Image 1 (cartoon, helix red, strand yellow):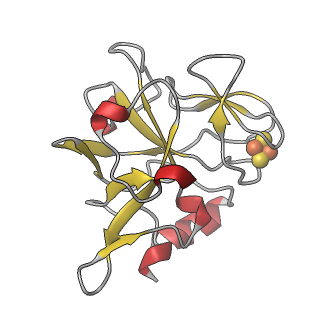
Image 2 (cartoon, rainbow, N blue to C red; image 1 turned 90 degrees about the vertical axis):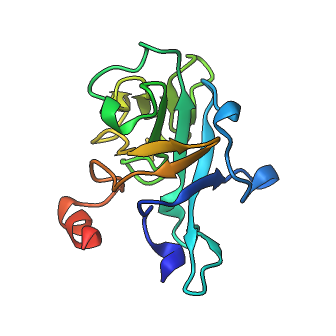
Length: 168
Ligand code: FES
């Protein structure tokens, strides 16, 4: 069903945190602190539909000063090299990844201390995760953020064959 579909091109990013859930995220709200997002599309009748039927759809958004986001982040899939979106789902066992309290601008998984660097393509910098967090292409539309394409890598703690099946 549509609420379980992975992010689709054209989806608008809305807050996933309990206090603001469903509010459209404004570009001006973004910072070096993690903001969790859901993709919001449309149902068959054309009404807004948040794709939270699959908890794996939660996303991580950051804005870093120009020049700080570098390869292997795909800069073409960011907004001006400053705003970047990733899957927030740890590739180890699927926990939702948080900011690292000890290291600003880094991410840490609360389950088994997997660490990721969101300025460098969310590569794994510590702990057991087998792969980076997948980057999701985004673009800016006014003060909103919109999904610009499918995940660039496997976003889930799934095997590659499960991922291939999911893409279809
Ligand atoms: Fe994230 Fe294990 S689920 S480190």
